[in-house]
Image (tube, rainbow, N blue to C red; front, side):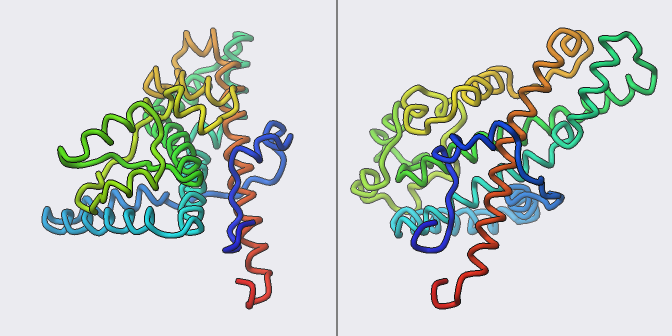
Length: 273
């Protein structure tokens, strides 16, 4: 727990055996994620309103970069939580046990028409699920960078071309970016992408476990497709389910630890909050 009472769970916690064993009770997560809310809100705005919203958010991010480490740690926690929560709402994650059973029927050649219909539903949800899986990786990896003091946004304007080129090659410390006198208008609306996050220079800083790093490469290279089509399920079904189960275990533990931290913070005496 840091000085603000916020508990941040990142790579150091991945050594906990519970991450691989899937310990703890999974919370019911039916709420719409923060990114979904922002997207729906932006779609309802006029062009002028959207521009003002963008300017406000960029100013807020710059203030966050200029602010204390504790504020960035809190935002990193939010990014981690929202990404993990979104992942756990994916159809395939909520129905992994059933998918495993359907694959068993296929291998045993006991599949019925009803089984095939159920499997088709997984394929129908594939696009939505892949977005949530990629978003989890991106949110968590950016949260780790932010908590470690690195800049996670792109840059606007020719003046910052040197920084724009540099951040594509290696993570840039927030302090080094601020020295350039960056303004809110020069903070991009967009954060660094998945391909950049998977660059060796970034992975060295983020330090994901090798099993998650390998999974992230596969998902990104194949645009996140879960491959639930009949032939691939027959050949790789169990491996797919096992990979998704491991990913779900990581997200579940992250979410549960965040809930536990929130409850512990609420239990602290008022003067310590």
